[in-house]
Length: 117
Image 1 (cartoon, rainbow, N blue to C red):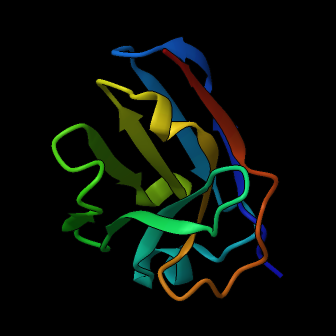
Image 2: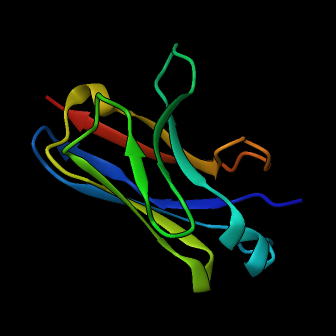
Image 3: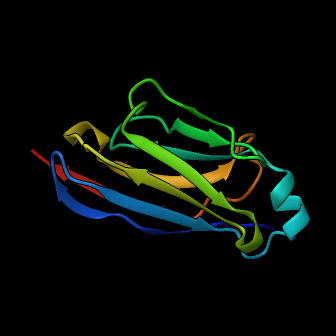
């Protein structure tokens, strides 16, 4: 069973930047490379929501709420994806998770991102 491990995040003031990363160590490289990968986030008391997706060839899509501020990238050789978050807002505060677009892997522990006003 694949369970990605998220890292990064932290506490930042509004307007600042943070980066979160995810590694799917137990995934077979060819399988990882075939997947559309995604970042999700879950704020306290809210449902988990899709933030961004990235295809094998790095075609990307973003939720309207983060478009122009967040950038997703992937490193297929190392089975990693990253999320660079700029111009952060307090409403971006959440636990950030990675998974496939179809959410087929076991959820990891996530990375906490806290943005203060």
